[in-house]
Length: 283
Image 1 (cartoon, rainbow, N blue to C red):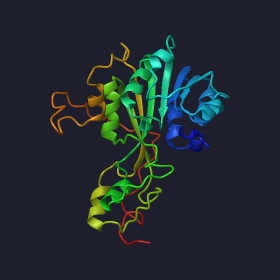
Image 2 (tube, helix red, strand yellow):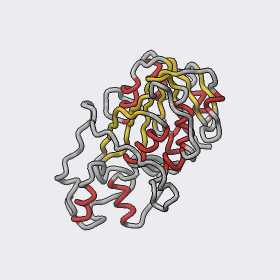
Image 3 (cartoon, one colour):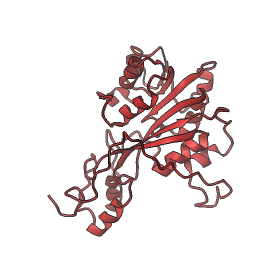
């Protein structure tokens, strides 16, 4: 079982971390369902903002810690638990799934069940790590894929997302994405050991031309449609997690809608594309 206490973080609600962005997106929503709260470092601030928080957490000791701040805490495995049964009769104003879906075998199913418990017009906030960060790309170009205790290649990550696949996941569930925020980390600053000398300068420049190359995480803010989340169809997993038509199996599925392009005013500006972080051989 995962020791969820290792994910505890001190949070400054005013900074541009993923957790702080999640907190600001939810605000004082009312009744909040929080998936995977760990020891409750986000739960505490959600409750302090005036929310009534219900948590679902796998790790029993972490759940006990989160219970100090939450109204209700259920110890359950999100990959095998039907949330609509566990929380039958509950209706929430907002859902927080911060850094949790990437740890699941069936994130599409969990997100659909949780979102179906949120009222029409309610808010869903999801944060996911970006597998297309430049440091991961450089590692792969050098034949490395090394899991770590924390970070982009956390050893308990089972699913990996880019901006496009994160959008595909939420839209396949039936949510209306209203905002996408990118948490920026410059190249060579993660724990993956990437270096500007890993590849030729022109290759590095090509990678850095992608606006998401420095995105560490995405925070997606979505709205539950007025009619509620539609029932899950038989093709939900394929629609949410597979690129259509690569092998032909999913060629009949409609293409995912394009990602929203408007970034919020509060998002941190991406680092400059020139300077010491970005040039081969600099020191």
